[in-house]
Each structure stands twice: as C-alpha cells, then as structure tokens.
Length: 156
Image 1 (tube, one colour):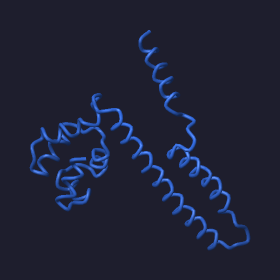
Image 2 (cartoon, helix red, strand yellow; image 1 turned 180 degrees about the vertical axis):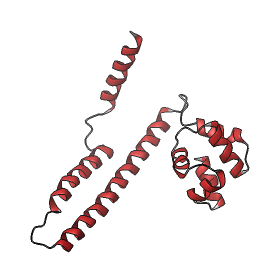
Image 3 (cartoon, helix red, strand yellow; image 1 turned 135 degrees about the horizontal axis):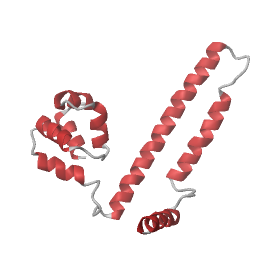
Image 4 (spheres, helix red, strand yellow; image 1 turned 45 degrees about the vertical axis):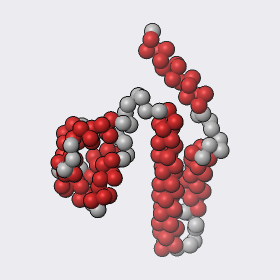
C-alpha cells in the first residue's frame, strides 16, 4: 500500500515507476497488490522514491506476517474478491459486445453469440453470488475442515 501511495503522491504511473526503478510493470503490480517483494526490488523502489529501504521492507512484510489481525486479513481478501468479480464482469461485457459485433458483421442469419453470452453469464452470476456471500458452498466451516485436514497430514 505504501508503494502505491508514494507512486500516486509523485504522480507517476506504474510504467513510469518501472522505468525509474528498473523493475518490470508486472513486478510493481504484484508488489502493490500485497505480493512478496525481494530485497533487490525493495532497494530499487527505495532508490526511486528516495526513502529508506527499511520503511519499504516493513510495509512489504505487513501482508505476509502471521500476526496481521484476522479481521484485516479477511477484509483484504474480501476486497480482492470483489475486485476480481468486477474485473470478471468488465471482461464479460467487453467480450460479449465483441462477439455481438462479430455476429452482426458476419450477418444475422444465425445469432450464435447468445449461447456463449448465456453460458458465461451464468458463470458471472454464480461468481457474484459467491463473492457477495448469497451462497457459500465453501464457507468458513469448509475452510476450517480443510485446514485441519492438511495440518493433520503434516503432523503425521
């Protein structure tokens, strides 16, 4: 979060930060999403922002530490799930529009784009129902059972 905040304060895009730091845009995206950052990457970012590497290292470790409060971990995961759902909807809309345009261009003798639109649409709807917890086939109890099962495997 700190890296994104510093980048926005400077008015830089991710591409600009990539050019200045010598890192790839993909690496910067991963780090901004809370992914792990190597010491080399943190050093390059610290140099780009002209800040102490210890500050960035502390922030980067925040999302991987086991002592992060459970409610914060769950909130971060929930927000990422919502973001994933909205991305899914956006891709669905763009792809469906492209298929409809292709169908229109090829002629309306047979309206074929409706079938992938309906199938994919059912997937989008089920994704939304799970993300917004209308249905929960893999809820908290399922997760606890799976964690216990895996932990028991490692203990034996």
